[in-house]
Length: 248
Length: 314
Image 1 (spheres, each protein chain N blue to C red):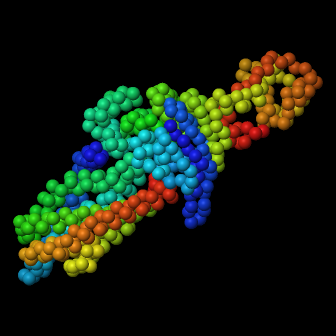
Image 2: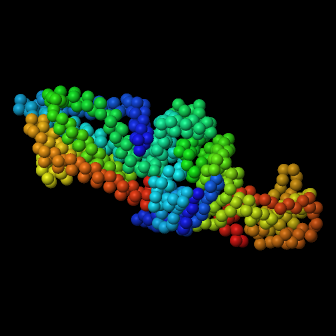
Image 3: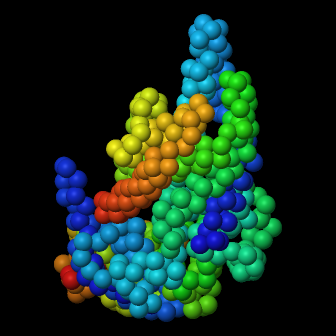
């Protein structure tokens, strides 16, 4: 398993190094959109807009994180089918789920330094201190893990139906919708991303961490990760029954 | 090494149901080059993908090294690897070395063992000086060598090759042929699916011919050739017989005129209802001088076509 992770990590780092310009330009374009949004809020929002700017900044960054972790697997699968490598990945004795988990984790690990730098720049532009409680960053990590679970659901659908570009775009906007839900408590556990974002907003506003809500969020994260893995496995089997793994 | 028992697979779509494999059974032994032949749509790829677990069969059992590959796919995958048809085996944007590292890792290889195997197989396949070349920049022949190198990297006892010489020039195809033979000498079982009859004839120990999802015949290339031997004859004449005789012969057999002035007739008794005596009856009228009568050995391509057309039973 360690060798599998090493191999996946090496591939990620090589692809990132070789296609750095493409990767970096994606990040920069997201950055420019962010600055335009915040600039618009600051210019036209009036003097009482302070808290909203901070919420928008946090929301945008959280959305960016979700996109990175949630959609990446589906794009990877579409690329692998196009390149014709998907069958070889299915021939790994560890199974495609393990192969893709390690590949996605590698991508995430490599994106981390840049994402962190972006966070500092974005937050400072919105006058948010990054000296936030550690629980803030823990919840952020949980949010990323949960969106990885959602990514595996989308990845499983992509494995079966291949051309899911429209679905992925829809999912990106659905995540924005989720960020607007004020999700606290037991039922929030079943809603993806919303409880995480709600806790982060509370922490940003200086409210303390609610231990019960935090536990619900941890359970919710695990639930979505397990659901993602189960759905992926379901479609993995379905695609092997239908025999259309490599058909695009 | 590999046993396939009563394999059945049907693909169902909303519009139609396709019985890709109806009932296929065979065993490929250790160190054997076992060829799987059949026309397009015969069920070769479905059989190979079922062995690899890329397709889940409806019925049947598959054993790799005694392990049930359907029930214990993970264990079976540690004992086999494959080069699938086309360019579906390498990462075009990674170098040869990076391809080894990535695909080796997929099979659990790493560290010193990976380095050792990488050097061994790259030397074996003659790509040791291409390690830093991006795979997409290699020639088609070298890409295929890389694909085979990746397949043998984990040192598994069973290797499945689906159309390994497709799209290769003659020289590269001959080199690939040599590599497959070498693998079999090393004790690896090679299951080969191809349309390249020269490759089959040159290196296969046994051939399984399938058509319409069913086994048509199984045997060594020699046995299959034997099946059709002495059923074809070539009669060469000193001079071209008269037009009257030729017209009569035309209705019975295939005629051919050679560049060296000889005139010959080919008689294939598996496709013709006539006997050699019928031919002589016609020739008796003018008694043209016969230079030679030879029994013709059909090449493997002809044999394959005849078997597929059902002439074996004729």
